[in-house]
Length: 274
Length: 272
Image (cartoon, rainbow over all chains, first blue to last red; front, side):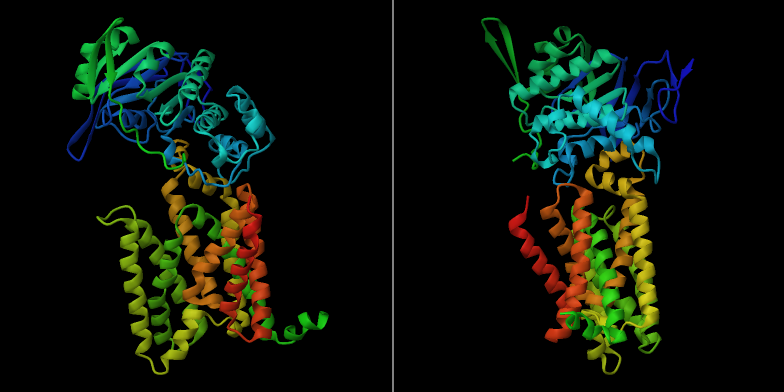
């Protein structure tokens, strides 16, 4: 069974959106990721949590086809990554040149570049797709705004809109909540939760343990190797967290049970947000 | 008033210089737009300086014949741009340190080579500060062809160059050849620098790559606007620079850069 849903590569319809099989990554002799396996279907969302240096970013870039696993393999809709345009990858915000002179709409339209092909310019159809995508993330009113004037939350939404304009069916977000205030964090997660049922497979690397159980069906707790995978309530227990975070975790007895305070200190500084 | 514009046009060498200055300034502004946005300005300057030994060799081999020197400059420019591209990726130093070493070393080699020739001081000044008034019809033709070629490539690959500048990681997920585009841009920068050498010389090429795009950046909201204003401001600098040079009797290369700088300062209060 094949369906033409993705440019250049057909999808095996019965295959999961993401199928990671015993992924391991070594760089310069150091083990970055070890034996990570999971499946993610369309309309599902998965949070990946773990301390800094746990391999979250590497995992995402392996799925996106930017890095190769040393062993194990990754399947996107039944195929190797590398030729999939249906994969929307949102790197950590610092990777984007926010001083670039462009409007929000300009950036979202760029999601169409991969489909237009070399030398062809983008047309009315592409613009329409971009406007629809902006509508979906609630940024239509800012489409003529310059990107450097956007707040952190708006920037993240714009990048999601770009992935939607790209007609991505998989969204990979690398620490999208870093540097956002609490309402913006919740707003963004609510948006993702609303997008997933429309057939998107969503994977989010994040630090905010307290938000995981409210917005995600499943969570992968990672510290180089997978510590636990499954329902957030089952996964995020004091025992597993202690294994993942070690001394960075403080357990406080409180009225409602044990309070786990993860030290998620020092997310990378984002020089564009000032 | 009309006499003001017509008087210098009586001289064929002035017309050639005017056209060469306007074309070179325009193409510098176009390529410079992406150089500025990518934070590669130091690299553009290094490129210009590193071309000098090639120019010097050509100068010695062909005994001062200028048109031949042009091809030597082009060849050195291409080799240097590829070397700089490779340098940035591997190597134990930060990219700017590595470029600094190569750039100063090559520049010294160039001066050393030229100094072996007799009466080198005059020619060295030409290489360092340009001699646009000496552009021959053949030189002009060559400059126009190169400028046209660079402009065509940039316009054809506009969205690819723009996207890899804005968000290289995203561009890689779209399977755009990000590294190839970087090399291409370095190559275009090399050709651009070589055409500009005749007009403003090694020492002032940087201004033509950076100042008009900076003016565009101040005034424009979008990339196309920035590039448009940059090119316009480049052409105006070439035009008014040459007239300024004619009437005020200052070196044409310096005059072009002064006008470009003036336009930037004029735009400063209107930034958005």
